[in-house]
Length: 72
Image 1 (cartoon, rainbow, N blue to C red):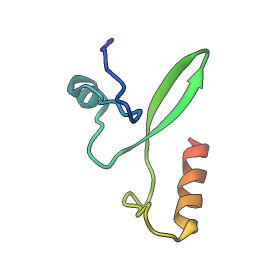
Image 2: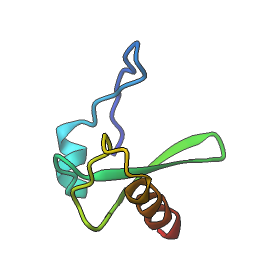
Image 3: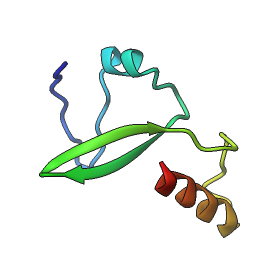
Image 4: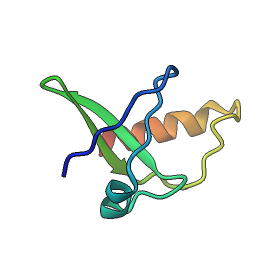
């Protein structure tokens, strides 16, 4: 499946609904982003606990999440 999306001035893009539904991507889910041979690869990742307060200054949560993403 191929869809066309536009990147905003702030670097944001919207995943089309058909793709979100096919991959079961929901509000609050996290996606890992990698580059492979000039392609951007988005992959849904599970982070536990699912709700992480990124605004919290506690660096332990951010380090935990980064380790979980790196493992997957």
